[in-house]
Image (cartoon, rainbow, N blue to C red; front, side, top):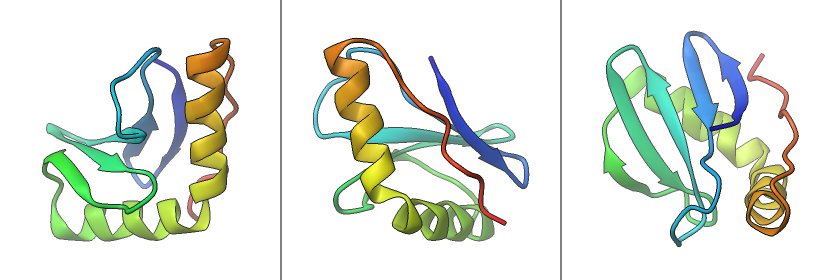
Length: 86
């Protein structure tokens, strides 16, 4: 499970050979969620509102990079770190 980014105690990661729709995982303490890359909809799980807002802000800035990671992980298992939210 590659760690894609981390910021403010939030860890963003993706799994190899995941199911559609394209998504990423976010974890903050004991809270976990899956978020669709294209729509930024929460697919499953939950984060506290402030943490979710930070994840959404970060994801909206990096949708293309997230999609590239999704495609690369599925194609050949490569991935790239994405800059954290500053």
